Image (cartoon, rainbow, N blue to C red):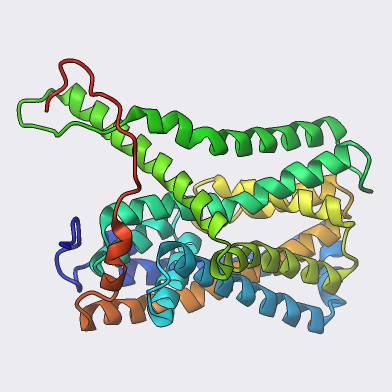
Length: 372
C-alpha cells in the first residue's frame, strides 16, 4: 500500500523552533533560570521557613523523587509506543518520547510543541499523516483522562465529606462537576462530530470560505476518529497503553509525594491528589515548561487543601526541579539521537503503515451543491 502524506526526506530539518540549536538555547535558558531561582530563595527576605525546610531535607526522599520522576518519563515512552504503533522499535520510541517531553519543557507551547515534534519525526519516519493525527488526539485524551478522573472522584469525595481533608467546598464541588462534564463531553464527541461525514474534494474554483469550512470539517472528523481510537485502545486492554498512561501520572504524583516526605509530611490522599490535578492546570499557560504557572498553581492548590505554605513551596520547587530537569536533559540527548536515526534509516516507522487505514465511517449524504 502506498504511503500518503509522508515527509520528503528522512533527514529533513524539523521546524525552526524544534531545531537542535533552538532546543539547546532553551535548555541553557532553563538552567540559568534554575540558578536564578535558587539564588533568590537563598537570599530573599521572608523565605526563612522555606530555607529551613531545605536545610533539614532528607536526601533519601529526594533521591526517591528523582527516580520516580524518571519512571514517569519512561512510562510516557511506553504509552507513546502503545498508542501510536507497537511495531516501532523501543529505541525509536524512546527517542521520540523523550524528545517530545524535552520540547514540552523547553517551548512555551502548553504541551503542543511535543506533539508537533512527534508528528514531524513519525512523518519523516514513514508513518501516514492521517494515522499520526488521529493517534495524537488519542494520546492527548488518554494521558489527560487520569487527571480528570482523579478530579471527579477525589473532588466529589472531598465535597461530600467522605474523604478527610480541608478546602473550599464550593470550589471543590464545582471543579469536580466540571471534570465530570468534561469526561461526558469527550465520551459523546464521536457521536456528535462523526455526523459531519466525509469532506468533498477541494478544487481550484472553490471559494476561500468553502475551503475553510472543509478544513473545519476535516479537523472535526480527525478529532472524532482520535477519540474513537482512544476508546478502542482502552477496550483492547493492552498493557503498554494501560500501564504507560497510568504510570505517567502515578509516578509523577509519587515524585511529588516523595518531595513532601523529604521536607515534612505528605498530605491526606484525597486532598493531595485533588490539589495535584488542579494545580497542574497552571501548566496550560503558554510558558516554557509551565514555569511560574504550574509552580504557582501547585503551591496555591496544595496550600488551600491543608499543606503549610512553606512545606508546599519547598516540596513543589524540589519536585519541579526533577520534573523539568530530567526530561530536558535526557530529551535533549534523545533529540540528537533521533536526528541520527532518521538520517540513517529510510523509514523507521514504515512497519506501522498497515495501521494507518482510516476507521470505518458511515458517510452522510453530501450537502446539495457541494463540489464532487
